[in-house]
Image (tube, one colour):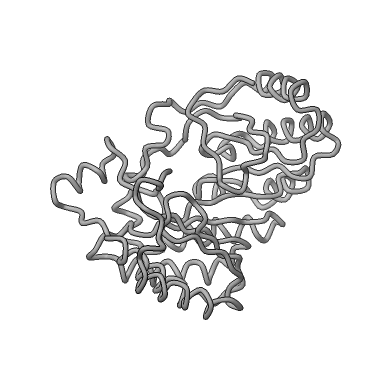
Length: 288
């Protein structure tokens, strides 16, 4: 297989075939993110993508899941995505789903008809980086949308049949903005009602604007127990039905449960962990 490194994927795509439909991220402006800073965004030639799919057939024989990388494959023209989807399902008739990252602006720019067509042709799951529901914080991190637009982006995917998995970033508001970040983010989740909600914990990436801000003393990162308190504030306010996860390597405490059914058990686990921090993931085992 041929890849332009680095390649990123969600934890739940660990056993999926990764196909790079785009390189880099079309937005690439978020102040906390260094994932694609070394790449200039471009949409790959469709024939190259098809070659990769054919090449993978020789390697793997049978594939049930494909993840379209890089940062937001949904930035591709719809007709190109449809061609890739149809080709993938032809090469792999046993294929069960194709998934991808999606930026909020990409979702907003696609029509309902386009999204429904993509779903009907096999794009079953999208990962949306919500990060926060705090409008002020969304502006600070240069996400490119406000909370209302973020909600509409998520709802647009859901109403057209696509399974939606969103990520939120614990610690993004620092010490001063922690409570508001948690509470406003819960509001967005409740309005959006995603099928899956995943929490990651902020790790400052050298070279990013947020890292530089922290080095200048203008951003104060949360401590280990403060991140758990923020996580608690978030979960206690989520009232919609969603599968909640914090199984990413950046987190101190792995959590999996169905909300709101498992809320009390999850909150008890967080409370126990705050009183017994020795059970938390040590810093040297955290990663992005």
